[in-house]
Amino acid sequence: MVPTARTLLLVGLIAAAPVAAAFAAPAAKDVITARQARLKDLGASFKTINDQLRLPNPDVAKIKAASAVVRQASVDLPKWFPAGTGPEAGVKTRAKPEIWADKAGFAEANRNFAIEAQKLQKLAASGDTDALKVQAKVVGQTCGTCHTGYRVKDN
Amino acid sequence: MTGAGPEQAARVRVWDLPTRLFHWTLVLLIAFSWWSGDARRMDWHRYSGYAVLALLTFRIFWGFAGSSTARFTGFLRSPAATWRYVRGLGPGGHGHNPLGAWSVLAMLLLLLTQVGLGLFSVDIDGIESGPLADRVSFDAGRAAADLHHIAFNGLLALVALHLAAIAFYATARRDNLLGPMITGVRRGREGATEMRRAPIWRVLLGVSIAGLVAFAIAKGFRF
Image 1 (tube, each protein chain N blue to C red):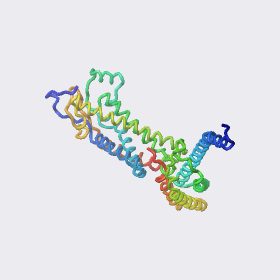
Image 2 (cartoon, rainbow over the protein chains, first blue to last red; image 1 turned 90 degrees about the vertical axis):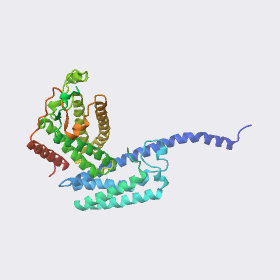
Image 3 (tube, each protein chain N blue to C red; image 1 turned 180 degrees about the horizontal axis):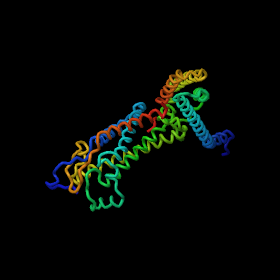
Image 4 (cartoon, chains in turn orange, yellow; image 1 turned 90 degrees about the horizontal axis):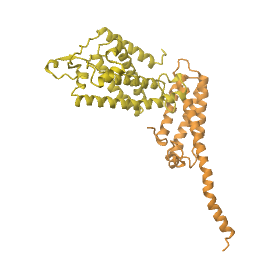
């Protein structure tokens, strides 16, 4: 029996599916690697802010630059977690499945981070180091709130 | 070596009070540092670390200026002498035996390393860090933090070894080492010389030095 065109098309698609999946898997890996790099920059920038605030004469320019990185990260963060880039991707990640199972909660935590990061950036522009010290702690707490629910705890 | 005869029954002083206080306070602080670090109570963890730093500073000073059994020259011995002791050929004095001496040295060095690494450590979020962490990069601070965790496992291994050794001496050698570290006295050993105490003013000097060093480092050398 000669297969119909439709049958051939169907078989072709089924055969191509695993090949397509193989191409999709590297994409998840790239997304994860890229977001880990951005998150590392975020951590390093936050250290810069806290380091400067410790000094008797903080370098406000450095705080401004670092708080801009923090603010940008808070804005971009939701884009770093497309479907399929959780632990199921098979790549080492501390992203918890809750990020996708509890989209509303994750978005809320991110929103709070973004709001407080914006306040931090505005204060950096003003150069008020006392207020910056307070706000840096507030931002740190928004980091912690999100991490508690959505990042795997270490050790 | 363990001197069980009636002529050795007389009790002699072996550990002075500063040494004993150092030892037991260190036990408490290591436990508290462990808990506070795990529980992410970083303010407490830092205070605990500064206290350990002060204790270690005092102990090093006491190792040069303290009572005879606390001094490094009093118990550190060459590898050859240590081997003679292990084979049963060396004398058993008061205080640390040559084998225990090496473990004391290892613990002190590892504790210094652990505290030192903590001073430069930063967490992954750049939120919590040691008092000297602002002197180094994020990458360096993260490396210090990773090593700080690894070194702690080494410390736990040494502590386990220490406890096993105390248990070994208690059972196989019938030599109670725990009591003397609490009371400061033990059953005298034949041929061993009596502990010579250091004067009080040296205790005060050691405490002052320890306090100043810990304070200066806690402030990141910024006053």
